[in-house]
Length: 252
Image 1 (cartoon, one colour):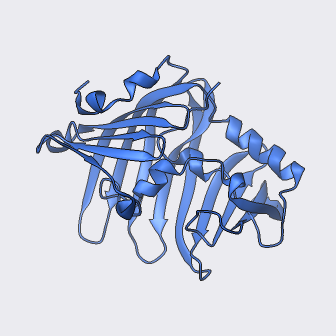
Image 2 (tube, rainbow, N blue to C red; image 1 turned 135 degrees about the horizontal axis):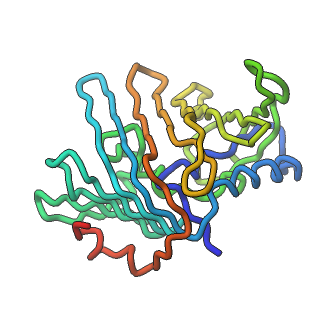
Image 3 (tube, one colour; image 1 turned 90 degrees about the vertical axis):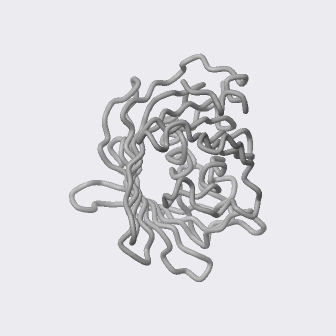
């Protein structure tokens, strides 16, 4: 069975690691596998809202989302009207955008993978990097105990030699009682905090209990992007043929 990525990046944020582990401890893998299974499903479909606040402007987008395994996803803007029909298709590690006003389909080149997606604080690279982070990072438990009255684990992750990653370190907190991710901190190669992601509004959706709100905040300002899942269903019977360039341009 394939594993559906909750479009588009929640799936990519469930682990963290550290500077001293040549191999990840089996106990850590068991914990992270439990977190991973929270998102599992052959396919998924739903809707989400993305609110973007920058230094100079703000906007809110309503989107429909579909995914199959971790290799296929389609995201289509429903509102506001001036953005409706704008869509992004991901197949394996390739990404295309469709711009309805110009009636153009654009393939994202490797040189633009670190560029902003839809003007948000999500990058094109975030869309395609949905592989399990335990493949690229060594992970240790850097803290285990109570934080603010909750029993938690805190993991620290450092990249393995030659791993194709952009982060110098990732730290993450996971709540013990239900193994829910609470936040992740991303550091650059110099050890400087680059961005923070926080997860909240944990509730049942599509027969699973998941965080339904994610906030992405760069460390160098007061900007942020908030992603809220409105609806989400799993195992909805999608096929690979659904994720086509033709369907990228279609209006549902």
